[in-house]
Length: 604
Image (tube, rainbow, N blue to C red; front, side, top):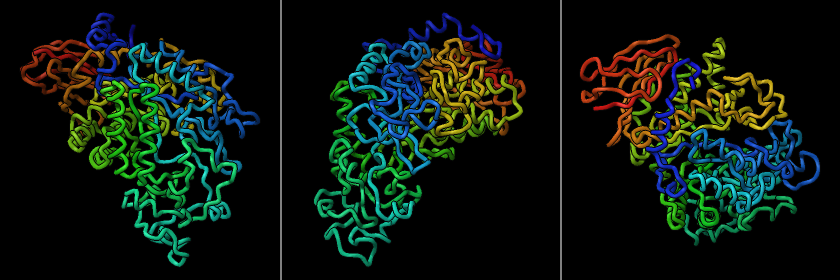
């Protein structure tokens, strides 16, 4: 095989050696550390449709009743657990060792104002936290999927939510005004109904900062900011039943995502749980512990983690780790979503220190790679990124467990950034830039996380619904008229091609990573950067392995000398244009084509 730049790919012998060095048999997959994995993230509704009979989730009526409309990007398109299970060969061939999928819990099928409705195909509008949504299948089919993945030595990570539920609770004032602005504690204290001049309520309740059961027992009236007017038909729709109690929600209107409202406001109307209440803490520990007990899953990605008070995570995360350990799962991986595309690691790291979350999604890596590879900014940005790993709770040890990614279902696909920032680039250049992003994804410290469909060249036109294409044949017009990279196919046909250049590249990079202790677990050190697009070089070093990586982010070929440790005597090529030897003690010279790379194993 050859890659799209015309250079030789990893040899067959190298691939065999890589597989041999990193065990992945079913018997020992539990022993792998979180940083040993290659994660694949997907939305079950958009991956593969294995059972068309469940497309409507057992519901009858039009799309506003069933949520199903395969021609709309905002409704269920038909993917399910059977489809995911039957594609495990495809994922294993890609080098995936852990599968993370958007929530599969039963959702409110459709919600939103009249004329602006959409469906819960994405999984984040949960009504029943104990059951699989019928659009995706059954609990038994989920168990079959988990068992099938485990039989292949693949881990399973669930996407979970504790911040909110589906939009069920209604407020009289909001329904009348068709708007629900956030009402603060200062303006609408818990101890008065409808503002400081209202009737006295909740005597003795001192506020959410006293998280004792005794204090919350004094909170008996939820109508301090708004008047609850939930329709009778929805009063008992949530499971477990405790979720139907309005006293367990903040009930203060829509968040502005700033200040107090960031953790107490409704996320675009979704019912915001009062996670300060010990009943909510205990309830979610029981709910999610049950998924560990029943199915033996291997980790949680936590949605909207930044919008939950830190004290909740300080109790929840240790409880989940302990529950998993008792089930024989010693390396249970927990990582929170802290959406922040500023590229500033400190905004992420605080949640591993204050909140005591084991890890967070590495949005800073995502933002830096977009800037350097898509937006043609200096490679020096990566020096600043790596230098701030000290901010995470356990420094480098935590940084190695951060899932890194190039794009996702919210931020959009990496290829969409590459195309929008380089409108005059040829399809070949766009593909080269995307490939270079993948090189960084698999060699930088952290846990590489591939967003489904990226390996098939899907581009998209932005984030959210515009980055949620199906891999089975789509009927969505705006998906089907968007050209893919590396192929003349479109999303109107099935896209599970194992010969796509991006699929091949990801598979090869995964094999290299699995075969290198340094790339999985090694310390990272910057060797060279530039104050413009061009050279970025860094090393990954463990006790028994050292790998040197060099990439060229510019549109021109470059030749550069790179300072390396003086005990490096020779280099073995893993991928790209590696020099065979040093040119002097402590110096190697690399020649890289535009958007080229070199991944080299160093020998002493």
